[in-house]
Image (cartoon, rainbow over all chains, first blue to last red; front, side, top):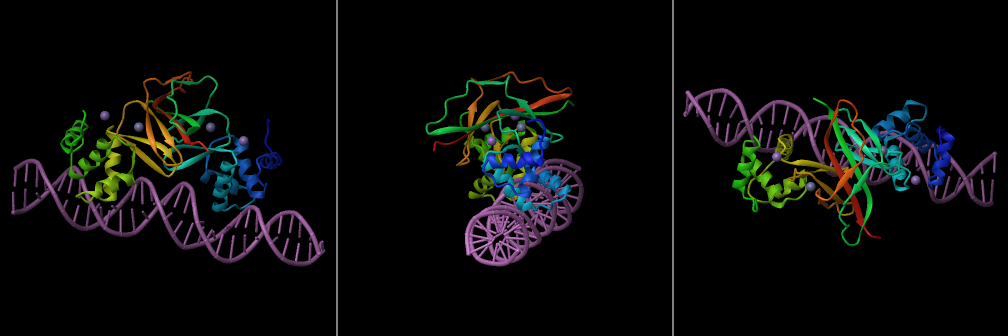
Length: 137
Length: 137
DNA sequence: TCTAGGATTTGGACTCTGTCTAACTCTACG
DNA sequence: CGTAGAGTTAGACAGAGTCCAAATCCTAGA
Ligand SMILES: [Mn+2]
Ligand SMILES: [Mn+2]
Ligand SMILES: [Zn+2]
Ligand SMILES: [Zn+2]
């Protein structure tokens, strides 16, 4: 898929068992058309820049619904807010601590080896690798 | 160092350029004697279980001071609160999402290879590897 | 077309983590 | 002692996120 339209979004939502409403389509479009990491607050701003007024409650409801349905993923790097990631494939993150910029690191070439066996009765939900960087002094 | 006493703590604080006050010693002792990952709230509870009353402001002030001075490290795995880690050496984390339990993974045997070069003018602050696990269904 | 009922959205109250401030306390030193 | 600077404190405040009951939207029948 090269370009994302709102119609695409309705499709995408349906394939994830999500009833495509106006608000949900706008929120999905905000995330997928930019393929950027956005906070709930940023999503809210973007979505309300154009036509539809969408409430804070709906933004959070929807992001949590998307998470549940596996449409997006959350990235926890900043103690003050969660980032939502439209890229659910395996990849890692580079976090610029000064600016708060969060970018992807392709998983292809990165190898993580030697992790100990999991405790009995546990299974992996995910492995997060975050490289924190700052401007050189 | 095998066993931690409050006197040890005063020593430790001094070596990190921290004036050892009553409250600071108690907070350091809470963290270092258990060598566990604690939230600010847990620190507050532990410290106030015994004698000294320590205020919320002081708990936060002190944890942030310890961070600044490199005495402890923060671990960001849970969107709702920060964990403070008395182990500042290189190591990774196993996070049990159901229970919120956070345990260490020794860095010794873990190799992370193939990370891309950093953008120009950037330096690494740290690399966080978090293995998220849950009870098998 | 009309309507009832479930799904969705909404404002606003609320909770929780963390910060800030201005007053208070402690202590080291003259 | 008396003072000044460092540290502590209560409580107000801020921001992210949740909750709730009421309002609105949609759609499947009649
Ligand atoms: Mn998916
Ligand atoms: Mn140190
Ligand atoms: Zn990403
Ligand atoms: Zn640790």
